[in-house]
Every structure is written in structure tokens, then in C-alpha cells.
Image (cartoon, rainbow, N blue to C red; front, side, top):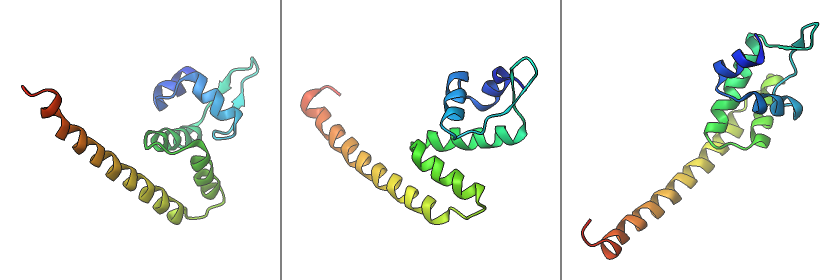
Length: 112
């Protein structure tokens, strides 16, 4: 499939796809004789994984580490557990900040 269809199916922009290819997050696809990228199913699976992990706020370095483990057929359980723990701590901090801000509403907006 061409990059436009690949973009549609993954939710990544064509610019992002090309960037991920340039830094090695996504493998470069085969090219047609006229130079167009030709993506296959394995590209879709990897791109969906990358998009999903980015939506969890994982950095590209963290994603690269997970992909390297996957490519080497190593289980990334410990790495994922560490990342989940970090995300959990961030969520707890955000929750405390949210509760604090909500407690200030009556002070600054008494009619709410």
C-alpha cells in the first residue's frame, strides 16, 4: 500500500511516518520502480504499536528499546513494568494536582 493508505490505517501523518523511518523506529519499505514506498502488513503492525505506545506518552527512545527487544525476540516485561510504574506515578501526581485545583475553585469562583 502507498503512504497515504498507510497513514490512514495507522493514524500517523505521512511526515511522521517518514520521520520514524529516518530514525529507525519504522523499517524502510520496499520502493516501487517509480520510487513510491510500498508498505506491507508487518509495517502496519509495527506502526500501530508505535502509535499506541506514543499515545501512552512513551518517548521515542523507550519505544526504540521495546522494539529492539521485540526484534531480538526478548520479552520486554521488565521494561514495560518499569514504564507502567512511571506512568502510574505520574497519574497519581496529576490526580493530586487536580484535587488541589478543584479545592481552589470555591475560593476564586464562589458561585461554582
